[in-house]
Length: 270
Image (cartoon, rainbow, N blue to C red; front, side, top):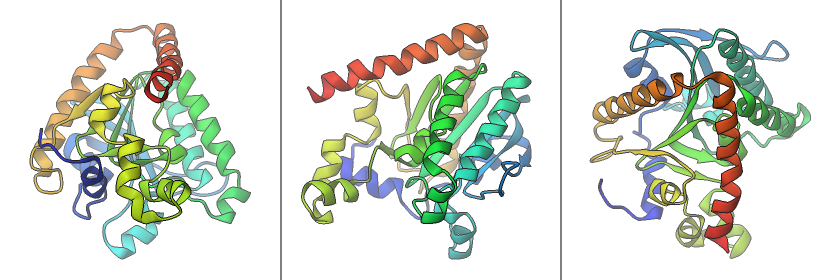
């Protein structure tokens, strides 16, 4: 893997030419049938999900799509979901559980949309309910951070049996700029904040918060297809492992995994 600083990873995670969720869908999956709406308010285009085939077997895939052109970014709200996006995710994963279909999520968001209208419709409740639903779901779940994993907006679809990160992706409770603005009263200290947050893949793997890093080589923004192929191979191996575990044991192991984070973070900060 190419060595880069933590701050370099922030820039690469946000790179304009980095592959997006729908790029992974077209490369890794076949027969993708998108499912729309939360059956309560609307269809949030920041979160896209549906049924597909992965190596010939059915899976349910959910991802945050940021968009590339200005028009596309606006249509997908820059990958920042409203409450109905997370309620759509809840609806879809419950469908997957009913038919014992594995769930694969792809995380790429600055965070949940923070607007007044989102808060009025229960943004915090939707995120909390999504986390709770994923925590107890009786089917295998694999989450992959493909770009930027920001705060509860990422965690809402990030509770999983296996969590992967692309080499140049990031995953954090707050952006480096936001952290710097709080601690130093200036966003100019973002590089220092990114180091303190340990938000890049290698740090999070060492902390035990993720399970695997997908090597990007020269970078997913330069050579996307080899990176997607490596991710596909990793997902296939992880799915084989998880399918061999009975459903009740799977949920218990997921619960124990989440409990272990408390001691991990205490050691890291104490």
